[in-house]
Image (cartoon, rainbow, N blue to C red; front, side, top):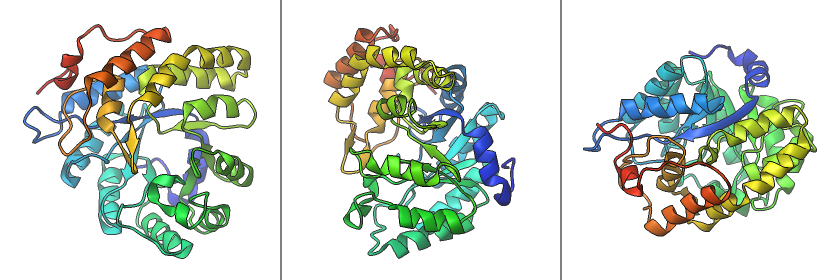
Length: 336
C-alpha cells in the first residue's frame, strides 16, 4: 500500500519524485504463458543499481490484466521500498483502467502514469476532464497526468492538454501530483507553459533527456521520467545528480558526448501512430545489461539493421555494451 493518504499525495510527490525513472517492460516465459519472475527481478535490481528512483510497470504490451498484476507484484517485492513502481494506466476502457489500478495499488505501486485508451475519442475537453476525474476518484494513488500527442487530443488544442484544462484538474482533483510535460511535441512551448503555470503546485517531469538536460539548467525540473533512458545505463541518473549540484558545464559536455547514441536512437522506428516499439526499447536496455527476452505477439518487430545502429551508436558515444551476440537478446539473460 502507498505510504501516504490522498490528502498527503502532493507532499509525498514533492519529497520523492526527485530523480529519474525508467521503464520495465515485462518478460514472458519461453512458452509465453507466464511472467518471467527472475527476469523482472533482474531488471528492477539493475534499475536500482543504475540509480533510477523508480520504474514504470509497462502495460502497453499484449499481456492480460492478471499477468500485469503479477508484474506489479514482482516489481514491488523486488524494489522493497528502494524504488517507486509506477502503474501504467493504458488499458482498453475506464473500467479496465480502474480495475488495473486496484491491482497495482494492492501490489504496492505508488504512482500512476495516466494515459487514455485508443478508443476514447472525446469531442470536448469536458469529456477528458470527466474521464480523468472518474479515474482519480477511484484510486488512492498519486497520479501523473500526461499531455502528449499520442492521445489524439491535438485536434482540440495544439498543447494536447491545454493549461485551462490542467488548471481545472489540479484545482479539483487532489491526487494529481505531477505533469509529464510532452504536450505539443516536437515543440516544447507547452512544456514551458506547464512549468510556468504549475511548478509551485505539482511536480513537473520533463522525461526526454535531450530536452531535460538543457532546460533543467534554466528552470527547476526535479523529475525526469518515465523514459527509455535505460539505453544509456546509469548515465541519466548521474546527469540528474550533477544538475542538482549545478555542474552545468560538465553536464553540457556529457550531453554532447553521447550525441552518437542519441542519433542512433532517433534513426530507428521507435514510434508509429501512437504505439511505441517496446521490443526496440527492450533491446536498448539489454545492451546495458537488462534481461531482454520475449514479449508476446502482437508486437512491432526488431530487425538486424536496428540492432546494429543502436549498438554502434552507444559504442561511438563511449558507452560499454554487452559482448553477447544479438541472438542472445531473443532468449534473455534469465530464460524460463
